[in-house]
Length: 165
Image (cartoon, rainbow, N blue to C red; front, top):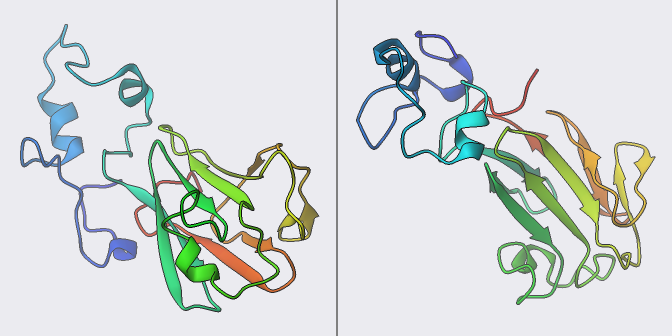
């Protein structure tokens, strides 16, 4: 990320909210011998353009809704309220989406993937035209369209620049 404003972020800059300064300023202020401090190993290993609180956005066009997957987090997709509490309301009445359909994960290093649940879903998962095998994660990139059965889809968006180009 450059020192200038990023057009994709609509003029927003990323700040380290704990110290009130941008991540690139933190790198510039580091003294020789400074370790990663209290950060976890996963955070220390993350590429320099990533910061805590960043997320990848999934856009569901049929519902005109976005759901975010934070760094180091996951989003479960299905109709079961207890298993997929954030996504289940989107799929009420969607009989082609299984109760436990798929999981999208975003690793601390910004790697994004989707996997159909290991037991399989009734109508499967596709990334663009690639059909997934249950339990095997498929990497995702900006612009990919993921299909949960024949009618429900989402597109990977990346307004914060988490994913590598």
